[in-house]
Length: 283
Ligand SMILES: [Zn+2]
Image (tube, rainbow, N blue to C red; front, side):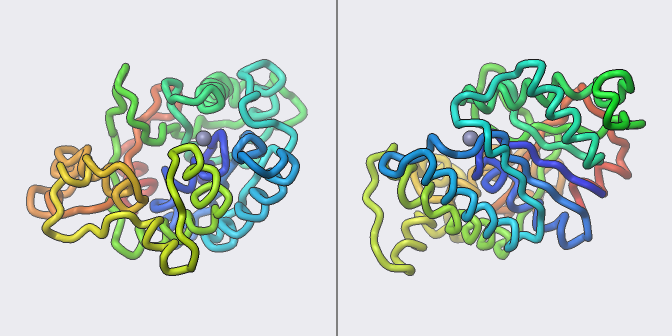
């Protein structure tokens, strides 16, 4: 199986699919992350050039740790991604060359202009992937890939999970490791935007990154009310979609799952049968 995760920025894929990616790699699937922008807008002190360079180094660490390939469109500046014809054809060629079974993308209702453009580009590319006379220099795909949206929290219209996947404690810890590699984001840029003070020292930073430590006694309400920290962020998917977890995993197990990742099926890709769903999500 080949999986392509298309994000607008470095860290979008990490935080939204960093758990299931571990399962895919373990199963021997070939996984690629694409960041359509180069990350240069994400800092308040470094110059855009310095930020791009540093972000590339951080993404390389993520790629090595996860065992995936990580591509960044280094010529596309943050906050400038457009769903225009040139970029659509660039994406069509990129997808055809990899020939994935599954594409994970943003939803077109996501908050950032780059996320929306990225989502629109995947939708615009989707059917044309199979049309031979468009971009004839790269052979058209014979079959449509499955396309799913990664999770966001916007409500008009709401994200409704078609597939929800349990993450183990270990997979969540590794997601924290991945967050930790994104130093310029999680310890510099994002705290700057939220007005947070970041401690010095490795252990103190890990605690800052984690936020609250979730135990069997922590309720969904407490998790959903937590404002900062990545452990709660990764737990919120399970708390938010508790009913979907119960439907998928049964009453007893579904109630206890702490961490999850959720995906909404796009109508524009292949509609998978149960066997393919299990291969892609419940491996
Ligand atoms: Zn983003």
